[in-house]
Length: 358
Image (cartoon, rainbow, N blue to C red):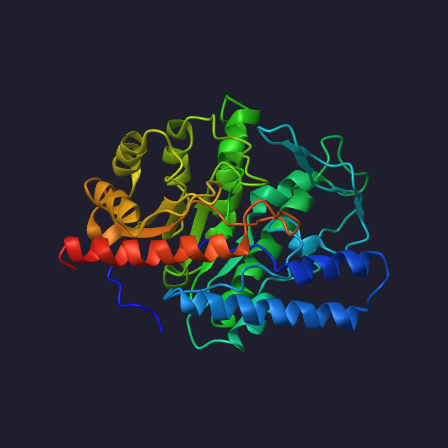
């Protein structure tokens, strides 16, 4: 059962996959097990993830993204108009992830996120949130040299339509809320210090958000962080002051902002305070997924109390800095550690609520 918590608290999304599933994925790739065998492993991983989520006392859960190949590329898995040599995203430790490159149009999603939501909802009575990838992240699929017979403007029109559809299908299927993963925000500033790329990203995402009613917007949020993969980040060196004012121009209700791993949390909180609008809810990160040490609930409590000095209580929420395994093959964080950290967030948020008299 979920604990009684007055400050809203939600996970970001991904949870490390069980060892059995990771082994099964390798066996499937090598042709040693069937699709049916793999699907059974997926189903068991989802059930186990939801059971562990429920055991943490979390009032809102996810499926842990157990069947997503990655948080960024799930919509295009299986498309036949992609080449592997797309944009590279370098991380601070020297490794990189590479997006595919679109080779022809029209662009469309192969997979919509509501399928994950429907499966998860069969296994729990708790509210389920669903993460989707931002239109701006997928805009990087289009090559700089263009595509013959498929102008960039046509691609963007198709992309906005598909991003809207992805969100709308999740809302229609009963998502508690839908979280747009916008982890490329700080990266955009790193790639283009003039901030034109960031502003283009904000404008593109707002074209999607403008298609929803006020009531629908109340159930849509945006997550930002400096990336998190194999215990490394891609843009933590970018000043939050160069992102947050533009980030909060997005026409969403909820904002899930990485904060626990920031060296100067008070400075970031002041930037948020100076730019947040009255109807926006700010879920501050109080758990650092990259740090292998499990936070004490009292540490979480104190981080929340610090945030409460800058953010009105009716606009404050708590979350994790990032997902624990945004890419399916990332095993840098143990599955048990992820759930222990989530439980610390739940208890710490409850402790802070009591101190604040809520």
